[in-house]
Image 1 (cartoon, rainbow, N blue to C red):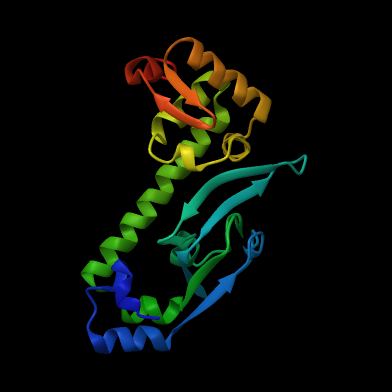
Image 2 (cartoon, rainbow, N blue to C red; image 1 turned 180 degrees about the vertical axis):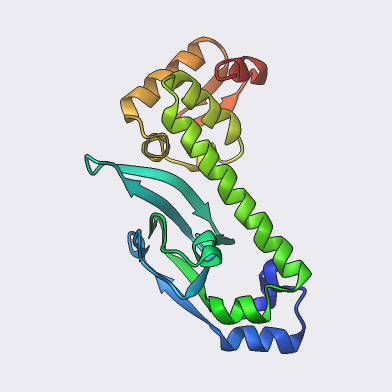
Length: 211
């Protein structure tokens, strides 16, 4: 494991990398394995270096609500570390993966004061806040049509790597509902669908569906 391969740490000196290795360890996970549960405490900062995880909660009916899917390379739930609070949601692996677990207290005291590291950490926190805002907006929206349109618009470059059942899970709607909405956009000439691949034909009209 060479920590300098991870862009978060490529500004560190060899001595600093060696120290970071001393307070870290790499752990492998299987698909479906739990990384942590809501309200768990953790002394570690989690850096996802391989694979995809999902952050999720359960509603009062015990339905799973997916808040966000995280792809490597990314920190996971670092706001819990920063605020020294329990994890606000559950996290499990969608694929096989690897996580670098870093002793957060030592990382905070020895590395987080460094400008380059601090800026990357703040940027990561900011991204998580934006994802949460998006989740809240989607959850309170009563217009499923707008929800689907926005997802297609915002994820144009990655949507074809996702299965339809996964998209429905992220949007917290039925797969059949998603299929109907996609078919409606196809009929309007807004998107094209070939097998499972979606191509946006008219970005302006798609934007009008949710703005």
